[in-house]
Amino acid sequence: MKKLMYLFVTAISCILVACDSDSGTSASEGNENGNGSGSGSCTVEPKACPESLAEGTICDSRDGSVYKVAKVGDMTWLAENLRYYDCNMDKTWCYDNKQENCEKYGRLYSWTAAMGLDKSFQKKFADLKGPTQGACPEGFHIPSEDEWFALDSIAEATGSGVSPTLRSTTGWEKSNYPATDALGFGALPAGRKWSSIFKELGEEAYFWKADEDHTDVSGKGDHALIYSLNSMFDFSGFGSLLKDEGLSVRCVK
Image 1 (cartoon, rainbow, N blue to C red):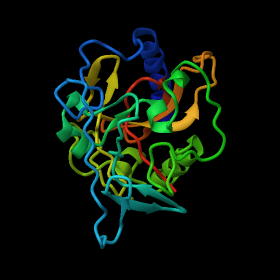
Image 2: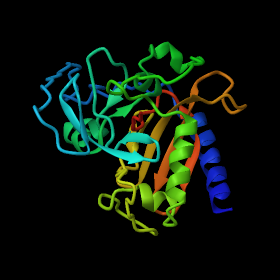
Image 3: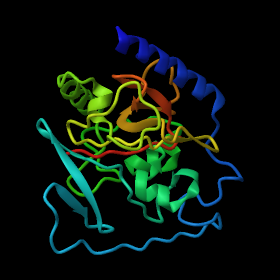
Image 4: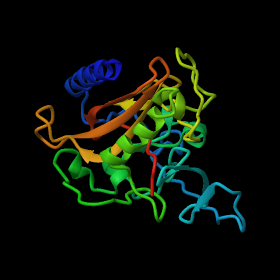
């Protein structure tokens, strides 16, 4: 019953966001890749992967980023938010356009940037079939709704509640349900970018699913499904948001 109530609240919130949000662009946004002070420059300095990796980590050969991974059931998940960026990507951000937030919380991506699609698909259905690598490292892909549900079910079965089981034990400002991070997923409250505003850092974690919203809420193909965690609840949230919003990305294989 609690989860159904939260689903309802999440759905209503997403409808309100859809009504109030715009294309996600603003003259005040500055440098959308979050690497500079707003000059619009693109700076990418890839590093080589280390010669050896600690157990439970992988290296993204594209930029040398090392990520923790967590084995959950038959799935292997990145246990950190994705940080990958290249100069051809459209609409990705560091929270508050500060590089240190990318390093701590990972990047925020529009759905099309996460999926590796042209931004024209922010306003129409892509109808993707099968696993899509998108911005994920080689061998990984953007999680589908079914994969998020599978993770949710395993977390719920721990008996500690979904949100406490998946959240990092540090980084959350307020909590009715202290985190256990029992599965090593390490979710951080990275917040999101809504229109020209960054919001909810330290309060909420939002993740894109590979699936688009085909319900009556989104008849134009401009919404995609999301998964969210909040420390004020012991369960997870589902719903959809506009594809041009900036959310976190986790990858799975």
